[in-house]
Length: 216
Image 1 (cartoon, rainbow, N blue to C red):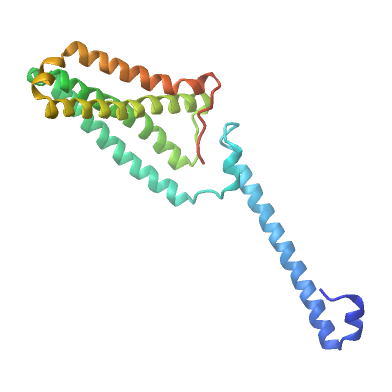
Image 2 (image 1 turned 90 degrees about the horizontal axis):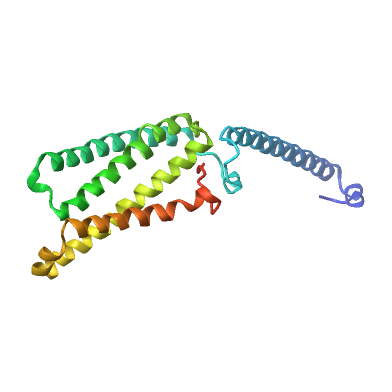
């Protein structure tokens, strides 16, 4: 911006241009401030509908467009329904076919059970409803249980896959020894360790070590 002395020494055209530029800049600045204030008010209002358990970290990001919420809701609905039906079919087949009740297949059934529970709890209907309402509407306690169940059965699926991989390695690398060593008792002990390990890593947030909170 030009000083007062420079404006008096300049020709009228220069003075007019400088004054116009100053007015336009001030007007643009006020418009920008008004838009920012409006955006801040809108963002704060939407975030407040989630309750007190939104981490301040998410306030620095713009809101996700509604189309992405709706698209995710539709996608999660299909994945959850088909995932639940598929894993339910595996458990039904195992329970009705006696020849499939082997120690190795106990791992497969445990994997199907954990994936089935994960599908019906983490997907449809809770996440579907949250996607279409664009917020978590089930309260703080349900949010913590949602995170706990997702953590337990998510880790259980991963750990069960690791146990299945270990079992398949033994069958391929040491076929004679593997067939004799893996019995129902050993399979049950391994699955008990999987359940214990998965649960132990997901309980601390309920006792103040971290927290289960929504992501915006």
